[in-house]
Length: 545
Image 1 (spheres, rainbow, N blue to C red):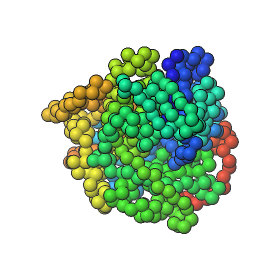
Image 2 (image 1 turned 120 degrees about the vertical axis):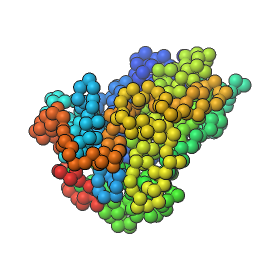
Image 3 (image 1 turned 180 degrees about the vertical axis):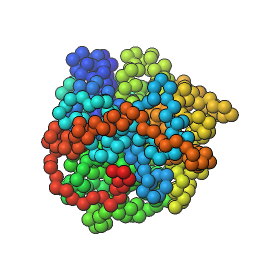
Image 4 (image 1 turned 90 degrees about the horizontal axis):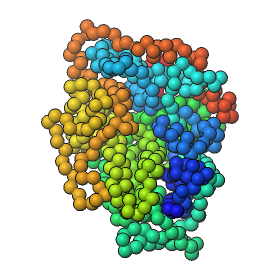
């Protein structure tokens, strides 16, 4: 029986353990592999509030988790969208990137039609009811449990520490071995593969496959296997966050927003993620452009509290990825594999991706390690570049010039070559699915990657649109008024923007069918009826609600 040893707990480690056990061992009922997770008792689990994307549903289903139990155990709330405030201009404007949208039919010209209209309705409001449903603080589920007129995609906000604790309970009950110890030495053989781990309990763990979930420490993938880190800071400047939490006992704003709010600040942006008991906020910023003290002051001004009335702490990070996530018999997951700043909630997603791909490419024989690693590394690498380009696009399309940070992110040298090619292509036509088959656009060639490593594909990366397809790109492009100034030349004799009829029908039905988010959480999960407190100073409402 193949032995898998996962080093490190937290969300990444326990997602890996629970998912492998669910996917390969049928949740412990048909054990094909032995899974052990070794977790340091000296490294505290730190939660800054997590937001997810809809792929989380697949992971929970494979593990065998009941949704309501999961939400109770992790203090979870629903997430239907990301709202961007002050990204285009520093004037209170904003737009949504929701999980749901409608299309015109087999040929979707909604983007092209909107661009030549007056643009008097935001684009996503013409194709998605979810923007206004979320703005009205309605959850994605009906109060009586019956299906809504149209399915609504959603994800979650939750407490990451509680999530790891919950997965620990689920996985160990289903047969995963949990060892509390520190790894003091990693032992490799003459073939370069990891053989054993020496623990500070004077025990030794043997394994056939080792998964590195030790975070930025990267104990196995970097310190043992020597895989270098590929830095993305040329394109993404932010490398630190000042974080704070505001419990509802003193700071319940009267609603639980069913979306993540991302508000642009002077040198980065603030996330705002609500759960059933608190709001977690964090100012993701670039230390080259603002000090930690000034960032903390901006964060607390957003909340509307004095500096001496709230605790903040610093979380440092680096943006980039491992040159390869799988080396020999070692697979990196979570922060050990890489990190793209949290703007589109990809932290948990990339940990999920490693678990899903390892289950699909599990090496039952040592002779299969190299070919399976080759394919695993290609898919993971492509996905990291896909995330990099998508996040890079949020910044480079800004028109803000009020601070040096926003002036710098627009400069050509801080835009990836792949993204430049995509944007040039989309100046001729709106995004479509065929754009993600490859990125061989006219007039542009990618430099060939040169490597002799048999576990790394030497071809240029490809954005496959696996996480964000053309509709997500349209949400950001049109939210950021891509090509807007050019279309102003069409004059004022343009048709009014048209909301799709199916969108209008859903919006008419929503008030009577979809419960307020906090009310649903109260009635279905037992969320406390908190007394209404102060409204955060930095919140910006929809202009028509």
